[in-house]
Image (tube, rainbow, N blue to C red; front, side):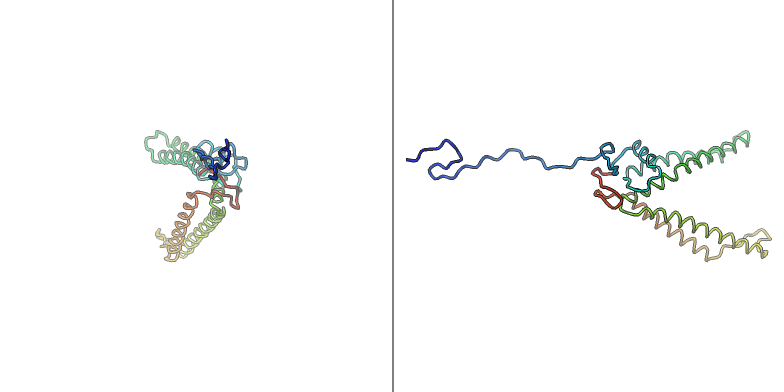
Length: 230
């Protein structure tokens, strides 16, 4: 007679061993931690709020390397609008105000607002250029998409202005402006101006698409990736 075993793993009378019961709960799959600005030593772009975005933008005042997330870029852009638009509106209000008792106070106010606006624009030109450069890097685009357009636009605008001035001078020197009537702009210059306007419209739409799209989650050639949607 075969003796019965006290162990459930040993077959009894030729029966197969019983397998252990399944565990009621399985371990959850591993999820990578979401990074924040504080625990991100590689300074990869992450989702930031308004205050942190401004701090990061000014702390990287003239940094053209690396990447900047959508939140970092657009919060800083909002700051520019919050300052520039009120200054422009106040300047326009002072220019159209007719109730001033002294024209001197009007001109002084306009001069002061213009000076403040010019100083603000000058102080923020480099950080705006730098953060736009890094925002393009975040989408794996070269910053020269923005830089070359600035340089090219300035050169084309200067040449177009010089062409208009030379045209006006050449016509006025021949006596066409003696009666006070300015000569008409030739059709060629008008067509060139329209073509340039359409080209810059297309460029502006392209840049907007680059700036609003989400950056690469993984690392690209401009810097490491990040886990937080930004």
